[in-house]
Length: 237
Figure (cartoon, one colour):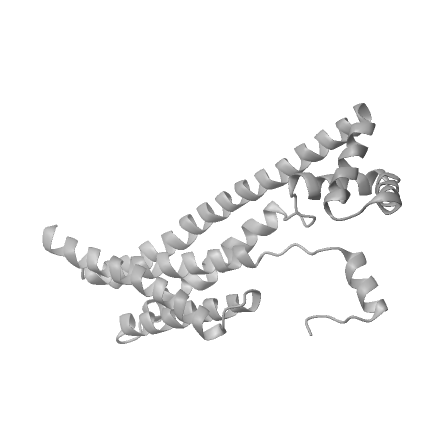
């Protein structure tokens, strides 16, 4: 079982409330880091340029594109938290100015859940007896706002860390001056793609190997396109 169902376990788990989940940021950063960095490697190898160029462009991509993704994720997540704060301020104002109207909204919400008669009125009374509970209920039921609010800095840091770690893998064989560095880079990057997809399956209903192969296929298609572009440009420029 995913968690215990004893009274003590239930009380402990539900009292803590839902936790913020940053798996999306890790997966997004990891896949993009591996794809874009290996795309640089494949494009440069396809154009038959030097290892020095691979390392310079690869490191530039790790830092610049990684920071850009982290900054974009920060801004997007910050917009979500700002929206949460705005809606909360709206509900606080409505409770001050139109408490009966807000109480009727709670009544309608619980009527739609199947409450009737005295049970309905008791539910309304319990919810509206506590101002914080009242506001949180309205945020969730009226606006669909999740109870777990993700932190912008944590989301940005997760994206950058995953991007940098996974994106650095395709560069390792070149940084270590290994013979046949490109095939080794391809193999290591394929392992990263498959590992990310497999790990992602822990938060889905898809089998681990199916998720791994799906992510691997996406990454290899991107790498193949980059290599083809580099090879084609070599004959033009």
